[in-house]
Length: 271
Image (cartoon, rainbow, N blue to C red; front, side, top):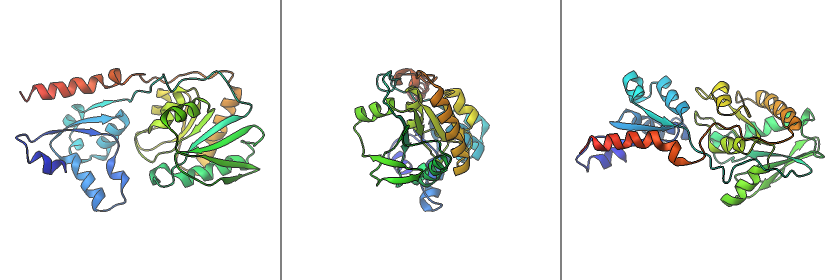
């Protein structure tokens, strides 16, 4: 589409907002190859998250194989609006674990998340007397996790209700087989919850811990994530008060400032 559109203009270069490693949204197929092709086009890349930019560099995807091109790439960390995602002082009788459960979107690794939760319940980490386990993001039946614990579904929520639920969480389990963090881990960390997520390529445990010490990242395996859940349960149980320790901006204007400056520079050069 971009190649066809640019042919209808007097220019040859376009701005490419890269939100993730797009070929990973497809199986190895024509769609995968066409998505990968876009990284070789004549474009100004603006990349959502430095981990995605460095992943493209390490993969030598298209023009990112050229070190000079990579050094001209602009990337930014997203903002998380603290008007919605912030620590909540009130606490319910039971602690709450939210699971970002979207089986239709396979990169979110629903099955591995369920296996990790079952391992954790088998170890007695989430007794139903003390913990609620809630699935968010898709319509699901209740799922027995073992030792009396059940994953209960919340249907798709409005933004305000989703943010309120996130503020009530003690732990967030949110997985994504991609170099991008995805947004639920960042939103939950801003709310002061412990976050369990997975590593992938340049999305390392060290890189995520720099965003917030409340983000615990493990390899995307059931056993590794169950061990991370055990660490999160211990930390959440010891917490007296939630704190926002996320290092990201609260407003998008500040978050996007470097990208906007680069875009304006590009547009000015075309005058």
